[in-house]
Image (cartoon, rainbow, N blue to C red; front, side, top):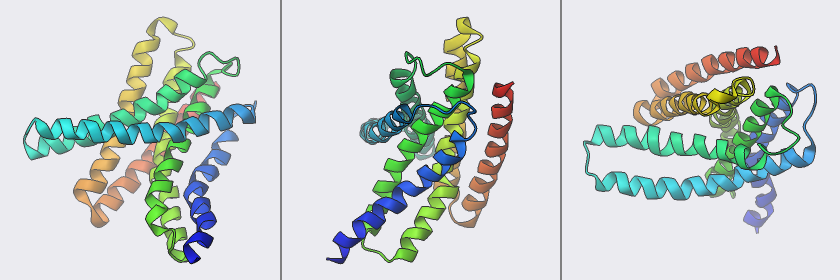
Length: 231
């Protein structure tokens, strides 16, 4: 009975980190996007997270079949399988849902919609991560939710903002659109990959400190990108 009663609490804490960052970044846009489009991109971001899980599982099995050295295998999994697949799918959401929409009418919109996609993606990750904790006490749910708020959920917003910046720049350099977007995805993949690498390979306090520094530097970098694209 207690588990059933805790389901609303579980959903609340799983989605809360994404909603808080969503509220923060939507304020960056002086011309707010339609709520219907925000919801649509967010939900597609959530759905594409399930597709990412399927593809990652499949690709990891293929990589392991190659029987490469252990170190190389781990690097491929972290950077090319997980980071690249997730960054590309978050971009794919915006390309398929927003690119042909009239709502995409200024460069900053690209950053906003990419962030929305990333936060939807992160919401699904949080749901799956917190699911085993659904019967836990309030304090445990809050603790995990807060950690996700300042770490992985924030990371998804930052990597997507980087990709969104290069999409926005491509408005003015259409002949270089593919190169610019590809470079944005490349940078986002590196950031995502190094974050995951620090957590998985370093672990403990070292991994926590390294990932925190990485996020702080990235957050500062993204703030600069927002200023540039507004200009």
